[in-house]
Image 1: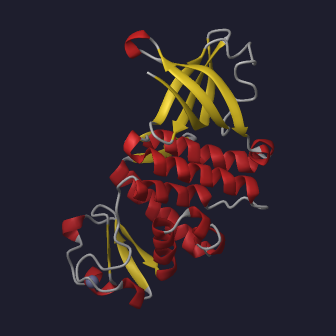
Image 2 (image 1 turned 45 degrees about the vertical axis):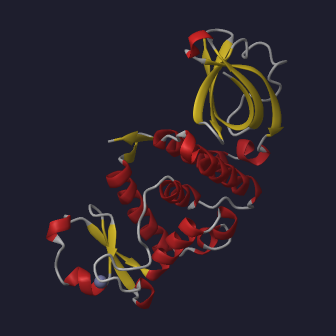
Length: 257
Ligand SMILES: [Zn+2]
């Protein structure tokens, strides 16, 4: 196998004295790892390429019997200057990158994940104050895009439009949202006891994140969420992801339960 593609570099590590390994996100193949033999010493084949969050055109070939991939050469297309120079921007990008890697991206979901992650890097590069809620909303959108669905518009029991009510109730184990009447009307035991009340603002923000491109919710949900909304989003998104995707945050990284 041999291919040439525009990809996003996620991480670079050293492997033996002069060789590096590179993990990157391809828009057609998902997350891949490849060796850059001689990459630590000879910068000629990969000028400025081998660094996290670069957009690079890589020429990749596979070894005999397809045991591993090797990078033949690279051309740097774009390197985020502010993300690299500012530790807050870099930290937010790293947080998203860690989640992306722990989540895993298969070829079927690669185009969406690639577009989303490049959008995140663009926001972190362009915004004057880096939005702290970005990793949280990134986690939500990635999970939605990759097939974890959550009805944010209608009560899962009676079907009532949740936009007519000031609050709703999220049942963690069932992964569904109820109107206040259905929440009080019972059925809670059958679906476990974990849950939380959420306000309309949170539902609207998450619906925006799910249904519109990042360029749209960048000015909406990402910029305008109140502190209460952020707290609710954090609880809802992280408990949804922990319970249904099986990923949780501990010791500075995401892990599979
Ligand atoms: Zn209901």
